[in-house]
Length: 241
Image 1 (tube, helix red, strand yellow):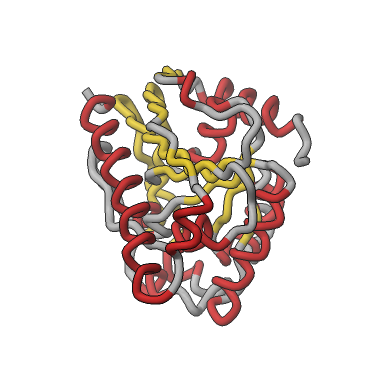
Image 2 (cartoon, rainbow, N blue to C red; image 1 turned 90 degrees about the vertical axis):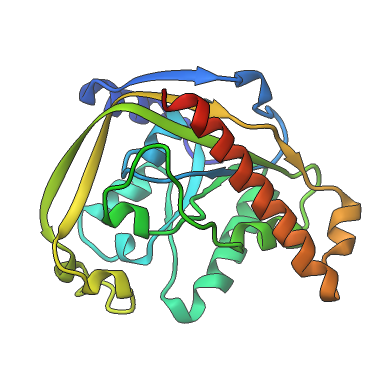
């Protein structure tokens, strides 16, 4: 299992920034099962914040370019992230890495909105469309007692800093990412006060996994994706006030 030092590093990092965190519905966090954490995403702090708050090391899938940029690569791996492969092998790499971690009873974290929220400022109460890769993972992974845990990061006091790194410069490290063809620079959201609200766990049963075949597979994946999106949206409406 990934080093428990990750927890201490995460908490110290947030303390240095002066970030105050308020956790709600902590009793919903499974303590022994394999857990797939699904969360909204607006800040580079989100993986650190969730690890420090939930109290277990979380292995996050992060963008390919983060594994290519010097210093950034060392930082994200220190916090337990695993950079994804280039687009040609990305999905296969994600499934293989995440499945192995879940089978080892570790927590795996995903941000189904992808990289776009990181590249432009959005309202704290808003979410983008969810990609469905995490739902396919949950149905395919041969893991007993797997739980999908929706979590909302609801910031109500924050600071936005405009990075001096142009987005086009990042394309040198990952030319396959179309988002890096935009003008401007990478916004950095630093939370000052934020609520972390734990949603109702979604248990993946053998019956559900048996339905994951043929035409029924799309329906099952849609149900799980919409459940997580709806649960997080509901929590955000309560937490961003």
